[in-house]
Length: 59
Image (cartoon, rainbow, N blue to C red; front, side, top):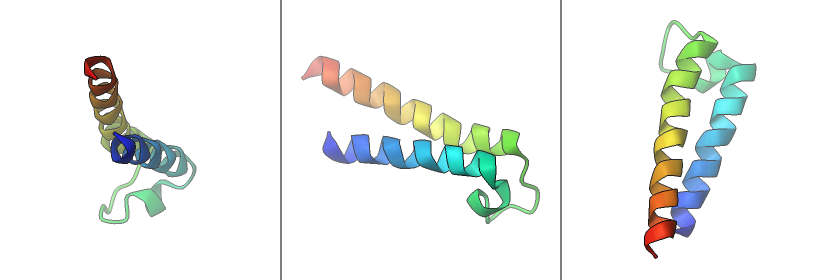
């Protein structure tokens, strides 16, 4: 559970950082708009948050 909360916080920070400097957050992509940062890191953050919530309810 602890690693999941750390990963969620990490990807949330990467999402915020990517909104400030998208070309640093999406270093593998040639085209780096802020909406792509939200799609990539935002969806990962949302998925990890849902998994964390489900696991905390089940335990």
